[in-house]
Image (tube, rainbow, N blue to C red):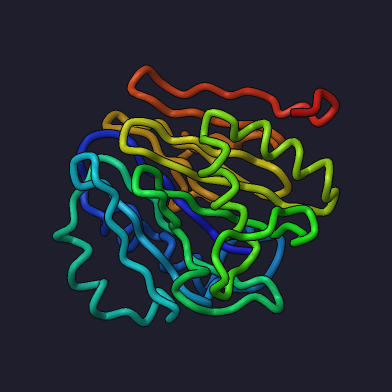
Amino acid sequence: MCRHLGWLGREVTVSSLVLDPPHSLRVQSYAPRRQRHGMMNADGWGVGFFDGATPRRWRSTAPLWGDVSFDSVAPALRSHCVVASVRSATVGMPIEISATAPFTDGRWLLAHNGAVDRAALPNPASAEPVCDSTILAELIFTRGLDALGEVIRQLGADDPNARLNILAANGSRLLATTWGDTLSVLRRDDGVVLASEPYDDDPNWEDVPDRHVVEVTADGVTFAELDPTKGP
């Protein structure tokens, strides 16, 4: 159910994060190594990055491996903060741009790896076709990212089968949750990568335990347990 990646650090090319590594998101779109649900991620992709304080997005419903146009432009796109995703659509959910991460409220970029019962989510504000991830993103934006842990704990209680791996960035912070799927962190000299699975075999990748929230800032990386017994 999707693979995503986030970066916070010095300015780097989008290509160096999304396309160039030996097990990049492009490779994960057709041959993920740690994906627990689904075989590939061919139902679209999206890359969001910050131009100063402004989030920009490039999204498509086509598989990332076949996008020659993005392949030619990605080496010229540079940013200090990136959120990227390749999508495996939940059965019954639409394959369209509006359902493709990263989502934004104009300040944050957000991706969801997982699935959640629509019955556990509020009614969407939009009447347009939506999927579980878009409604979830809308809920998180409405509640505010500082309440991310509370939102995930509550949804996890309401839907015990939910998978709620969130990745979000606002240009100065990366936030992520692990709830039912994998996440790894790589602390580089020039910044920090959070990713559903490592994009190479660097031994410094660290697996994040399940049911945790991770925050990355200029001060470093912090982990906090999401204890479902405590409630929101």
